[in-house]
Length: 185
Image 1 (cartoon, helix red, strand yellow):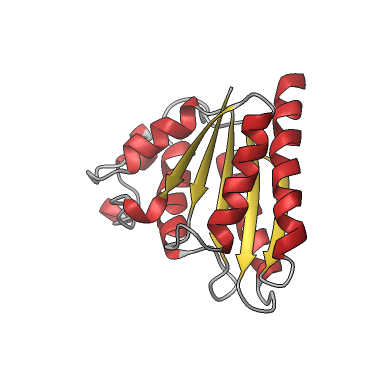
Image 2 (cartoon, rainbow, N blue to C red):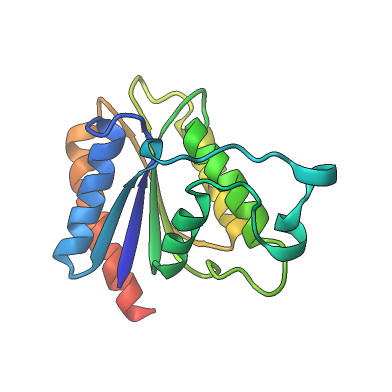
């Protein structure tokens, strides 16, 4: 069983990353294999809206841009569950998360056949460094991406710097619970 965690923050040691690491620690303690991906370290370009807004993503389910997108996409396809931990920027997911997820939903929802990601669990974490403004809209965006990708939302966890201490425990327990849910699936 593989759970892939995506850190969509440029900070590898901040609130967003800490929540993700605790989630993956909980999953590891529950006997899952985990992989942590710091998205900021990857070469992930924005969609070019080829042709009239749709390129090979629509007809063949693949992207023509040559960067780290395809390798990350393949890693997610091998996963049983995905954890996305994003900082809340202006009530939205981070730019690196948005760029990747925009391309991913185009490729996974077009072309022949069903999405290989369909039915996988998604655990989303929205981390706001301030008072928490924008967390709800960020979580709604994560939920919308999950619908486009046909993922099953396992949970959406909000956290602020003020709630960090007890939410870290929540994240660890969520990782454990995610593994239990996958074992029953």
